[in-house]
Length: 360
Image (cartoon, rainbow, N blue to C red; front, side, top):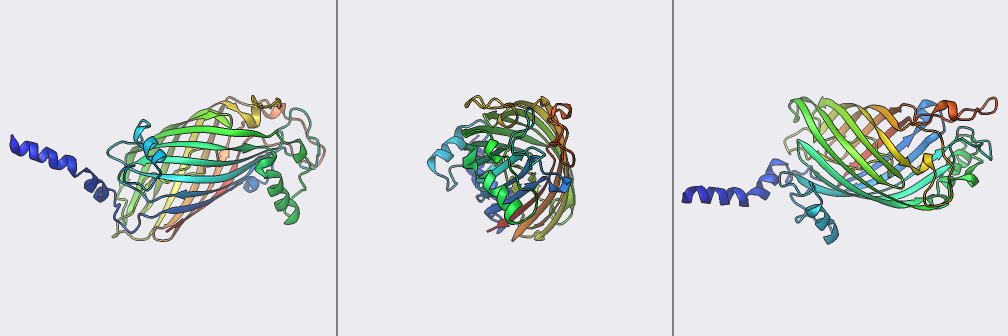
């Protein structure tokens, strides 16, 4: 009886040591990450609907618990008390993201987009994310705050790229953009590793990931389901990173650090399908805060697929290139026809992505 009690006590007190060993937290690959993400629809030879986005993300090192992290007290409290974020069999990290998105109609030369067309709009947001994960599941909670309207500086950014750099048409309708309002959103996701094959370290491996994401706020209120596949050589354990336009999804870096014995190089291929329901979007439905009631006739259920390739140097950097192809979000027949020689506003939100992580 005494021996059983001693064993139980030792197992309970060894939890943090086990976590650090099990998840390679002592590895030199347990580093902070600085991610630069660029999203643009130029790969589909268009310049409308979701036309451009960028964000900069910072993710801390991984910690065995929230109490062990270097986070401020408020972040620790949320991590310990928000459901699922404080699970004992997981490691944690938190992240900060700043980013901008812009939306435009198809005919940029028209200074007054016709009724029924998508209004110009821009957002500038900051996101704070709590990340808790292991090899089997990931749970992420995110708070986003920012602004939509002139203060987003989307007009200045697009005019600099189009006019000063001479890349495309002068966008003449930004004076009609959606009115200024504060932006606030909450997001939560819970993903599972459904299946896996192979060996993750210095060998070929693959896994299937699945989970829901729920968002609530005046930027977007939605519920999605996603299933994804990762396959490659010396790929990350845990979960991969997919394109995440600022404020429109959860920013996460839920990979397990590579052990010291692993090769610094890895390559992986990704593919996924996502579908869900949009209950409200200020970009397409108009505002319930201001009197800007302009809306477009959109679908309630949307779908998209993603495919890409990643190269990792786990000591220095990772590069991810992907294409997101969305099905129609706006009903095409409801969009006004453009003048001869001009493009109609794209009904779907399809774009290409480049993501670069630097580890330090």
